[in-house]
Structures are given as C-alpha cells and as structure tokens.
Length: 87
Image (cartoon, rainbow, N blue to C red; front, top):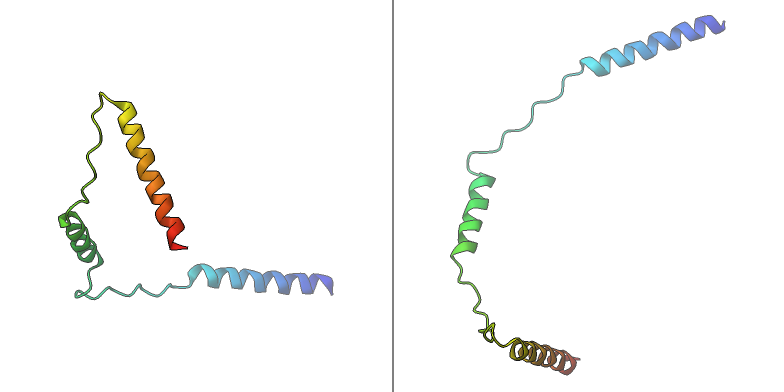
C-alpha cells in the first residue's frame, strides 16, 4: 500500500512540475504610444535645468577665514532665532 501511495504521489508531483514548467506566461501589456515615460522624464529634467539657481550670499574672501567663520556663525544664530520664534 505504501508503494502505491508513493508512486501516485510521485506521479502527481511530476505532473505538477511539468505543468508549472510548460505554463505560458501572458504577454506583457504594451504601453500606449501616447504615454511615453522617457519623454515625460526628459521634459521634467529640461524644466528643472531651465529654472534659475538660487543665488547664494557671497562668501568672505578666502584670505580671511575668521570673517567667513563669523559670517557662518551669524547665519546659524539667525536661523536658530527664527526657529525659536516660530514655536
């Protein structure tokens, strides 16, 4: 009885493996010609490149690192004060 059960289980497993291996996958759906994601991304990139860059404050000359450091600290303190005022 065990041999018969083993043979039947083996045959069922083999049949299932064969069907899984030979099953055809559905063809992927084609993207409509109207919607081209590549063109959309290129348009967004061109738009982003055409926007003007934000103008940064002119840093102190490289000859005076102390002045630059003071400027940075002043900007940081101003930002902290602004954040404290918001709450």
